Length: 252
Length: 252
Image (cartoon, rainbow over all chains, first blue to last red; front, side, top):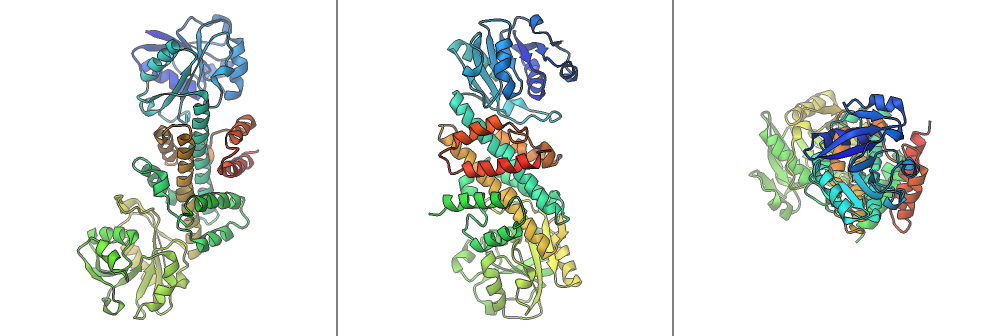
């Protein structure tokens, strides 16, 4: 049984902790957060501390804190030559302090506090300074997921960028749809079957091939009409840009 | 049993025909297309014709052809005072020739030829010149779907616009994600669990509340880095616009 210490007690840490402690070969033995309130909210029966001086010996230390705190925090870790990994999509591995052996353990999913997460299908992107540590991360990954990807920091940056586009941006488009309907006294419910179907299509078909709509069929009349509907809307620029991108993509 | 004639033999016509002919109270008795090849591809055992002179008597005539042909076609229909409806999201009801009683029967879904469609959950937006015809359309709708919405032409225009955003635009964002990964020798598969989870969240939560990502948390450093990754990409403008829209939306 290999032991894990979590630095951070937010959503990612909580979901990781639950998944790891269901596995056979790994166990989270301690959770650190500098904020006592965050620790109190971490409602699992595990040793908790807000004192870096009391951190236990472990095989892997996982830093699951906000992206912009990772670099500074890694400098404060009070030991050397152990395996310390972060869980961020956008922070380079080499940004971690070189006091310790470095790695990345990035689960590619959106973690909402209350939503149940099935880790088995979540891709986990790993990276490490050396092959031995990479093997440890691979084993840790395989203990909770069937989809482990060894990627470079550059690849991971692009994965994170793509994730922002298909998750955060897509969600904003959902909001735009809701907002436009709301102004017509219509509810968002009417769009839900379409949203689910649009997402489901990617399982079997490439998005390039399933593209439909006014821009795909070069229907400039409908595009003109819809731009007019958006004439006083902050969304008109987004409509124009995505429409132009589709027109450009399929012009031949 | 009320009878239906379909004008048009494309995807929408085919899916509608299958659904209606499974229902109890309505039956498609004839399909018209001016193109013989399209009729040949319409592989259901129903009377087919490419001669407007042979159109049968029916309770409802459904014009399921491309948006920009509807107006002209409706003028050529060789009879008067019958109920003629179109299936388009973007064409006003009053654009149909006034030779006949007018209506709209707009199923809010994306129809790919081979995909199986469960009509029961598809919202169908209806509209008619008079209450009696509206009742007929409502009955027809209820015979294939549990979700019938009576909407005005203006509301339907906005529903169609929202559908373009959450379906066509979202699909293009999926393609962007795939494209960016492809340039890093990574496959689209890695994004699929995230895409499915993002769409599933709308079932229980409003997109405004589930918004996450760099723009949502005002993480200008990550935004700067990602804009840099896109510096030679045609997608940079889209990234900027959606990011600014999210920043603006949550600035308080």
